Image (cartoon, rainbow, N blue to C red):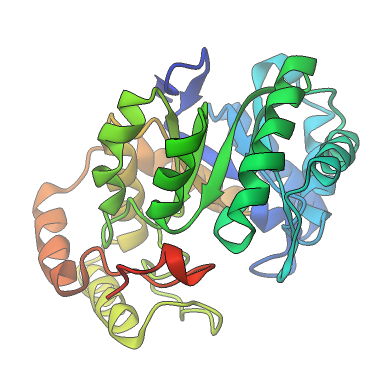
Length: 313
């Protein structure tokens, strides 16, 4: 496994990291024992960074991950969780709720500190509350040693720019913006580098667009994005290749992106993903697939309040 520096933090993160949302049965009902074994396999194969949230499975993901973490040397892994989102439509970025949320997360995760804490999907909350209460809460938690580094997560890239105009962050977590079909995160990198902010990239498969399985009903992508992605996936399958493999390899190849989160509760899948990340990319296939995806390149979908989604096509 290759490791990269995360911004100006002292953290060396594995280029492929573990997103624990699957442990909350977010995508399918999981076997808890298999989920715990998947975490252990990921760490045994070199992954050292694991991300979770109380929102995933309404605390189930944190609880299952906590059982896995209990059996691992804490100083060998980096843990991040989130605060502020607690349900599909439940957001609270107030200072007191964040303090309470962190205590609950620490208890479920069987640890006394988090390596990183993100305010979760801030585009849905009150910007004033995020700035006036949320960020100060993170700063206090860092001073107290309960959180080593802090940041925010969200889908619209504009939300990061807006926060960084007001506040210093250690890290951000962005998803669905550095993958085969969408590389718009690249436009934000100069700002992040200038402000010394580390970036965590998530969802290299674009929440299931870049595989051969049927896209979930809840997926917010428009029909054209879905159709074009599925045609590219079908092409790969027709020549004996897997677009998911190409997608993971593409995301981890960029040295400006320190780490990419993938989520699974399957030992087989995490082992395969790690193996893929260490194999050379098929450049000819990559060219073909990028050409197929060109009509919807950087097309995204809305998330949160309208002011963050003004540039959506």
